[in-house]
Amino acid sequence: MSPDTRTRGGSSADAAPAVQVPPGRFELAPIAGVLAREWALYRRSWKPTTFASIVEPVIMLLAFGVGLGSLVGAIGGYDYIHFLGTGIVATSVLFTSMFPGLIDTYVRRVFQHTYDGMLAAPVDVRELVTGEASWIACKAGVYGCAPLLVAIAFGLPASWAMLLVPVIAFVTGFGFALTGIWMSAAVPSIKTMDYIISGVITPLFLIAGTFFPIGTLPGWAQAVAKVNPLYHCVELVRGTAFGIGVGEAALHFAALFAFVAVAWCLAVFQMHRKLID
Image 1 (cartoon, rainbow, N blue to C red):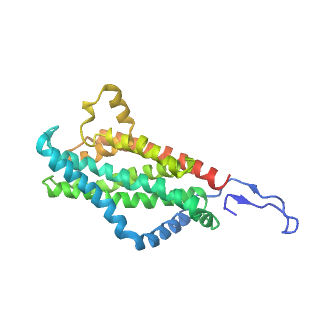
Image 2: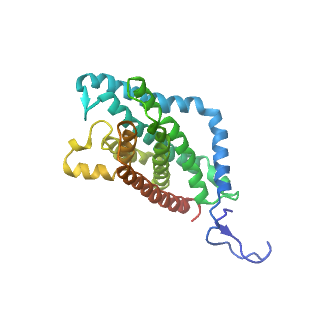
Image 3: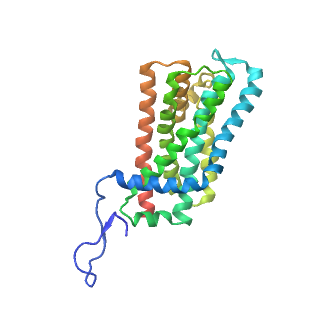
């Protein structure tokens, strides 16, 4: 029986039917338990996970930055590999958060029934979703820094502001992990995830200002890009390298926090429908 369901009145012989009651307090201890479980699992599989999460964006950066950069030269007054390196950070965060949120949580919910066991403990859906997304965001915050380090190795001047990049990556990764969790609970089957991968994830990183300034896009596409949470991540990461105004940075952070709030509500609502209702 999940923490969202309680039996009111009577002994086992004359127990009344179980009824749903509002969930209790939102507590940090269950979230810590979820994180501890994830850490134990990660210790067994960190090598292939780390390899895929770091090597793929680095190869993309080198292929485009060095190969295409030799033709483009500079963009927006910056060397293309530096411009791209700061943008690929956001792409890395997207991939290392959206895919685990989408695929891993689906497998655990549908095939492994992991969440049924977790909800039998004093953990409710809100804490489960928050814990899962927090762990994914932690990994995204670390892995997302790899392309930036490569860009620094290729001459991008390091700055103290870059210490904020893991924070930016964590917040963005948290939002996209929640989005993946929400979508994993909304799709009717694992086959339909192809629609999300091709129709959602691919456009997200193509119109985020990663490979080229969004100012080169048509007006309608620029408007769409500015709604894209990944665009705000790109601007913040790029700002740590090239400079950004405090007010502008605050607006980008506000957009990311709003994205996280909406994604959290959607993920909790949809997962509650699948696991409890």
